[in-house]
Amino acid sequence: MSPKDHAAGDDSYSGVRRGPLVSGEWVRLVDGKGRRHNICLQAGAAFHTNRGAILHDELIGRDEGFSVTSSSGGEYLVFRPLLSEFVVSMPRGAAVVYPKDAAQIVAMADIFPGARVVEAGVGSGALTCSLLRAVGPTGRVSSYERREEFADVARRNVTQFFGGDHPAWHLTVGDLVEALPEGDPAGTVDRVVLDMLAPWECVDAVADALVPGGVVVAYVATTTQLARTVETLRAHGEFTEPHPWETLVREWHVEGLAVRPSHKMNGHTGFLVTARRMAPGNPAPRKKRRPAPGAYGEDYSGPRPLDLAGSGDDAPTSDG
Image (cartoon, rainbow, N blue to C red; front, side):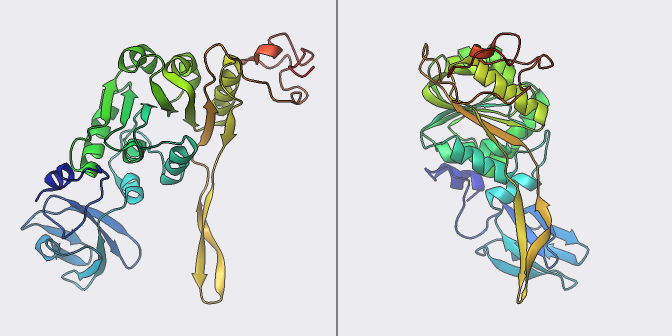
């Protein structure tokens, strides 16, 4: 049975496969130093390492979770790759959304089975895999990508992970603002995920597409992008107060009495911003505190909240 046949017979479309390893599917080999190799199993083939060769036929037909010894004595663990492992090693056209951020997006945007989700842009397809797993075959993930070469990479990666075409995925090559009204008409989208250089340019289109109570989440890399995105959502007037944050992940070394933080950590990868769509025509309440001194002073040239549309910090706020 090929991976595609296996996926076609699995109603969950989760990308998870069970049972013995078969020709045509991918496995991950990890050596004693933690070095990782992803290989596609093919009957009669061999994988060559600096510790000799490993015959694919020695892996095919066995249940994952075993160790194999190469021809020169190297020992390797053999498992199918987890989604979090697959996305950090898959071919890339654009930078990938790392697992720590993908997990935050799925949780904080409240992606659920059957959800109708819009994603822009698709990058290399890393976040797309997490979104598709979350919505399941009854949901819909509409991905919009401006660059054809990125879309091609994403197609290959998503198809490889799920072992075939996922029924919930629709990929459009084009600009989100122009293509969204036709692909996902007004008031039909539950969640929107913006992973792009200028998400603030899409706020009006996103507001039109989202259902009342829907969630928008933006993933940006720099503080200037973060500020512009937050202020544009505020200035729109029909989103709740934006919530910006980032996550840092630090591993620990644990060995007997030697328990300490690891010397490496997953530091800044990106900022996340979430906000919820108010019902059309219903303005969002302003937060009950005055802006920090100078926040919207004469040097500030970005979007302003509706009640600070004047020329400085002396403009009145919603609470007087």
